[in-house]
Amino acid sequence: MLLSKGFEVEVYTGTEEGEIVGLSHKIVQDLRGFVREPDSRNVEYTTPPLCNYDKLLCALLRPRQQLRGYLKRLGDYTIVPGSTLSLGDSSIFLRSDPQNPYHEFIEKTYHTNIVTASVHINIGISNTEKLIQAYRLIRCEAPLLLALSASSPFLDNKVTGYHSTRWHLFPHTPRHVPLFHNHDHFIQWVEKQLSCGAMQNVRHLWCSVRPNGDNRPYSLNRLELRICDLVLNPLHLLAITAILEARITQVLADDTLDPLKQSTISNGDLETELLKIIRHNEKAASRDSLEAKLYHWQDGREIVARQWLENLLAELYPLAKELGFACFLSPAYNILQHGNQAQQWLQQYQQGLSIKEIIKQAIHAVYKEEKELEDKLCQTIVTA
Image 1 (cartoon, one colour):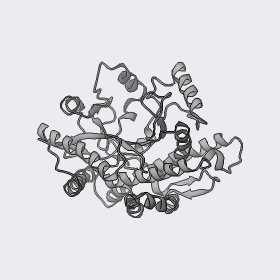
Image 2 (cartoon, rainbow, N blue to C red):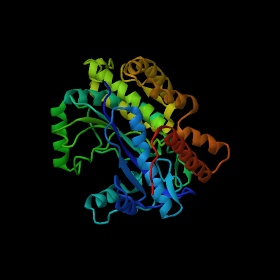
Image 3 (tube, rainbow, N blue to C red):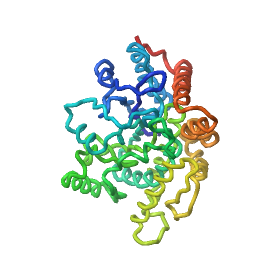
Image 4 (tube, rainbow, N blue to C red):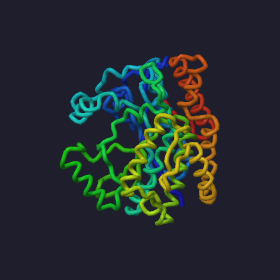
């Protein structure tokens, strides 16, 4: 049986020339299903939890097509790909809700380091202790999914030296987040962070993956992967999701699939060593994505992210085939072969294209991809 899956998708709005323009105050007023972010230059929509991948594909596309139609009516506006302010301006913060005290705190504390676009993937897990076990494993392997999704090599019209500038800049808060041992540990830790002010509210837990629920930390029903850059190609996003679902399905069937149980690293306290590896791997993946040199949580051996992913896909494919979604893993092989979005953009830059030209081409390529998929697989979307 397939698990439920849902997405929180943040996108930039702007011109066909790639200039990012703050329009969220208009969008959330006129379009149902869209919510504002602290900065008005991006806006978020959420898909309902669905088990079926075909329905999930259409749930990803429909709001985006509605948004595109609305932006066209406003003027020469569209969705701008990428996870950072590729063409600028990161020196200014454009408040979407000047009266919101939490937004004021975010602007003063983090400034535009949080003005990024990304996708959060939520996987439904009803057993709370299994959810916490899955959290431990996925947190150790989240850098692999960042490596697949990296799409932010530019900032302020410059090459940054990172494939995911977003994850390099994003404030990981609180600074130290443990590999929770059980649900009670998670509750006690969150309560402590709230009482000491390290977290402003229960949503103020910004790490690569977190337990999630409508009444967290007490009531949990899903695991939220937060590390991925924005992946506008829906088939690529579903491939990343299929990897995540297959891995969690393995956890649900195996109590021993747990870094705190399986890791043979013995350089002191195991959890401390695993957290060191996680920090290293996240930094390495944000810099070099698929070519990053990572350390495996099982035994500490060095392994390139691309090779680790190839090994993992070979392990997960039979399970995905048995459950009927192996075809959705296929685009991951395409990313490994041809590079992620950041790598392709950097290759175009090295061939002589300007960053503005790269973003303009990406805007049209993404629109074409979405239109072809929508025409082929989904019912016609009425945008008028």
